[in-house]
Length: 499
Image 1: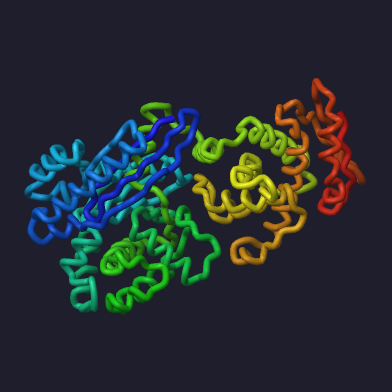
Image 2: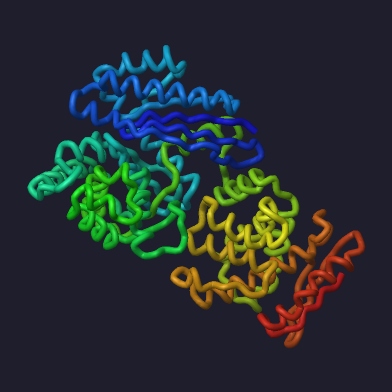
């Protein structure tokens, strides 16, 4: 494995992300820290970055480099975006960073930023036809992704910081200024013709402001899962948040649940940008992406060193398995057995094939809680699955996978806390898949993959599972049959397992 450090010198903040990349698949974030310097505001007001801000930036970068050195980071990638790109004294800034912080900084173009955003989305979400928007401090990047391919990108030279300054949005808002902002945004978006040539299914939002809007919405709805990635809210929710935020003074915004204090002064500009775009394009759904430019760079690094990621779900599951030092072979053996049972017993369980990915997640990660504590590890597995960024699934599927994994060691589970997300049919499917997982885990009790399932026979009273093995499997069969009572309860049939 190797450690990769990414330093992002943005318009609003300067950020360091350190990730550990495993050559066999996956990566995990070890460090994610930021300093809010607002370099873009200097550029907006004076067209250059002040000496005070340069000092702060350089000192921050020195600290970041020293942290990377202490963590034995092999590769550091440093880049800057719109603030440095537009600054009249950018050469001075870059020279001081090179001389004092010992870092070579690459200035990305707007299109390069949009491409990296697209890379992050393609490798973390399955996209049919979506518009991606990244609202930064001084620029807004837009990308069109169709069938997980990047079609077009564009960049606009405004963001939350410079619009807040231009239209005086940081505190009490003058509605004449708001009207002028709306006109400006509409005119700006109309300069991108391809935006209006396609009907997008949704908008995928990138960046701290959009994640913060998602958090406000989750607080408002008392949403029970505290995860940003792949959270979705509607255009009506967005308009409601925008009206709430713009009606308050800065002091009033500080009291809005879910709103970060360091974004309270610029959140109105961000929500205005998103609201106007949603209305112009008649889009009803906004999806929050947990990744952006930095993750795009990580994925580029992975592709250059280890090859393309062919299956984003498989890749993220491997990432979790390796980071928790789990038995990967056992996890995949259990999935293969569970999938075989799922296929053979489909006339009995009637579960849609779309839930196979739920079964895959729960099979791969059913024992992940052992990394916390063996006893009652299903509880820890539930928590880890629900709080991990597993790519390619929505929150409902993630929750169902967590419950399915927990069910492999527990007959009865309390679903009440998440009743706003899953329904009675979902619970029935969780219990059925959890039982298939329990049987499969028992059949791989020795962790060596010695058993395969030949076929299953369904009669009026019985289900017979025929297994094959080159060794004596009486212990595994006995363990699998220990849940016969539950099989009878869920499927109304006797369970028979034969070798």
